[in-house]
Length: 400
Image (cartoon, rainbow, N blue to C red; front, side, top):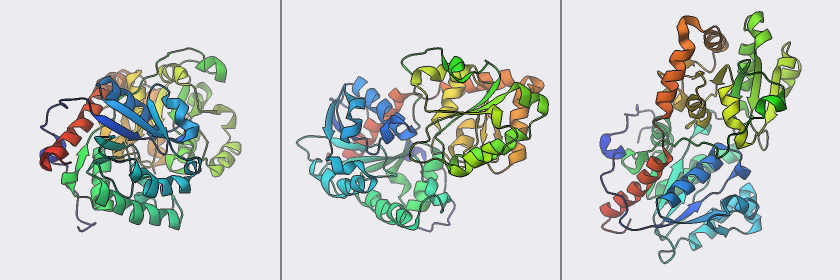
C-alpha cells in the first residue's frame, strides 16, 4: 500500500455490520493494560466498555496489573505478575505471557482496549484491538527513537498479523490506521466511543478552587506538550483586559507520568499568572459542576483520537471551541467554534466570540452541542464490538 495515497472515507460495508446480536452470552477477556491508574482517556474507555458489555449479559474477565485491580472489584479479574507493571514489563507480558491465557476453553475472544500501545504476539482465539489514536505518527518528536521503533515497526506488525479485527474510535483514527500502519480498510470498523457520565454529581468544585460560576475558561486534559496548553496560555493572554478581569483560565487534568516543564515556566512568567489555575485530577463527582459553570470549554489539542472532554462539555450545556483537526474537527463541526491548533490568534478569537456572545452564539452552541452529545452511547459501542466479533466469525466459517 502506498502510504502517500489519499485515504478514502470508510465504506458502508466496512462500517455497518449485518450480523445480529450474539445468540448467547460471550466469554470475553478485556485487556486493560495500560490503565494509567484510572487517570486517562484509555482508562475511562476500559471502565465504560466493561460496564456496557457486562450490562448486555456477557461474561467479562478483566486483565489488570495488581496495582489497578481494585478498579474492577465488581468483575472477575486476572492479574499479571508484578514485573508487568512497568512499561517494558507490560510489553514483554503481552508478547510472551498473555498468549498463554488466550485459549478457546476459557474465552470466546479478547478485547485489547489500547491496541495503539500493547498487543499480544499470538493468540488461539480471536483478538479485537481498539486503537484510539496514532498521534505519534504525526508528531515524530513525541517519543524517543526506540519508542517509535516499537510503535511503528513492532506493534504495527503485531496488530496487522494477530488482530482479527481493529476498531477505530473516529474517522480520523480510521484514516491514520490505514495510512500509517497499512491495515486494510476492510479489517477496520469505525465505532465511536460513548458518553461517560459520573455516577455522583456533587457541588464543591467552585468552592475548592475559589471560582465563580460563569467566570472561568475550562480545559479538561492531562498535562502534556501535545495537548497544546502553551499556545492556549498565549491565546488567553491576548484576550481584552476586560475579559481577562472577568474570566480565569482553569486547567483540569493529571500531571502524572507526562507533564510539561516548559508550561510551568511559561505560566510562572505570564502576566496573567494569578488568573491561571491548575487543579490536577479532580473527582468524577465534580465534573458536572466544572462543566456547567464554565464560561466555555476550549480544547486546543494538536491531535485527538476521540476527545472525551469535548463530548462531556457539550452534554453539560457548556459552549465549546476546539481544534479543527483530527477527531475534534470531526465531532466539533457544527457544534463548536473551530480553529487551527497552531493559530494563537484564531484560538483567541474563538474564545472571545463566545465570551462576548456575538450574535447569540452561546445558545446556538449549547443547543448544537446537546444534540451532538446525544449521538454517543456506550451501549451502542458495546453492541457493535459484539457485531465485529460475530461478523469475523461468520466470514471465517465459525472460526473467527
